[in-house]
Image (tube, rainbow, N blue to C red):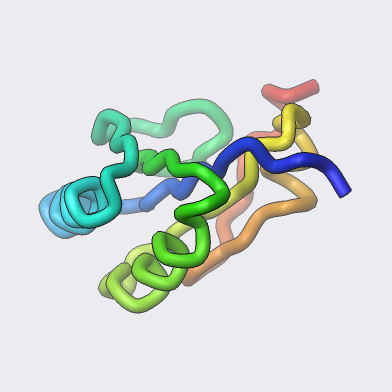
Length: 109
């Protein structure tokens, strides 16, 4: 089993749900003391739509993942571990909350 150094949760949103996503990410940041990335109003990296990233350690995973599952308010959350292999993390180790969407995985090749 690969060693997991951390996790990224990407909250997906659109123009209509931007404020909701910002509120959810800010609440998670404040509640758990985790890192919140920028709110991207464009597709970034492998992500097919607008998103905001939350980064947290393995010790926080259970609490943060549980909270996101129950507080995502219908938004899609894409979650993956950080093992040092970005392709596998995004393709093989991913967890989806909500509708799964096609990622642009060719950026990792």
